[in-house]
Amino acid sequence: MDEATTIPFNALHALALVARHRALGPAAGALGVTPGAVSQQIRRAEDRCGLALFERTTKGLVPTRALLAVLADLEAGFVALGRAQAGLMAPSQDRNLLTVTVGNVFASRWLIWRLADLGAVHPEIELKLLTTGALVDLGRPDVDCAIRFGAGDWPGVMAEPIGTHAVFPVCAPGLAERLKTPADLANVPVIMDQASMLSWPDWLAAVGQTGLKLSGPAISDPALAFDAAIAGQGVLLALGITAEYGLERGQVVAPFPTITHSKFGYWFATARGRELPARTRKFRSWLVSQMEACETATQKVVASHAL
Image (tube, rainbow, N blue to C red; front, side, top):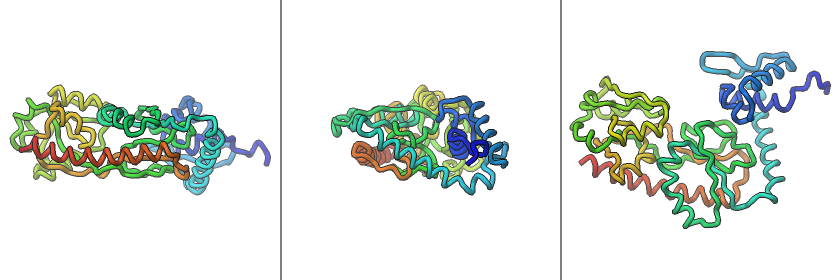
């Protein structure tokens, strides 16, 4: 094959990642280069094949029909390459080192408080956490698994739901004294978590308050939004899993008994087609059992606080 008509490997990798994330930034982070470098790789691929491979839209970079036709094969190829590389590196790696990529809010509000239990149950596992708001490429040989929040439909990923997705408001105990009914939310600050996928309109509809006007501080970091709720700066719509620690310790309370369920939630994710080593299977089993216990405890706490 003529080199002038061959798409370079780096350009193919850039195509797959941009198609997955619909943006240059996340792809650049995964590749360890600048967004400008990724853009150059895309232009190089388009020049080599003589086709437009992305449509530049207000919703991001959308793959064209030509790219979509080969995208599944492209994704499968990189998964296979990652699996082959992991197999070659396995003999020299620590079989007990477990690398998990996880979002900041889940790490700080749930996982960090349970690591002592993980150490007691599986002392042989050496845990390494990669905390980031970006989607880390699970095809990398140095990443075992991820705990992700969303709909569970990521390309090239096997995603297993962990727990239900209970949603309810929380606030500091002092602020809760001003909340007798859900209609009182119109008279207190409501924290607007700009990064949240949770829906205030859905919860308000469940309590018969469709159209209620809410106002309060807007915060773009979910972890800081929860800290603001603890500090009494407003009412926050929270996921039960991440609110459980604060509820049990009285940092926040659930002023109302109504619980809704989001279509988004937490998932245990691994690269599609990768064989899971013992350390990953052990961690998954421990994680699921902890989630189940957390949900049971959270529902009891919500009921007791709302009485």
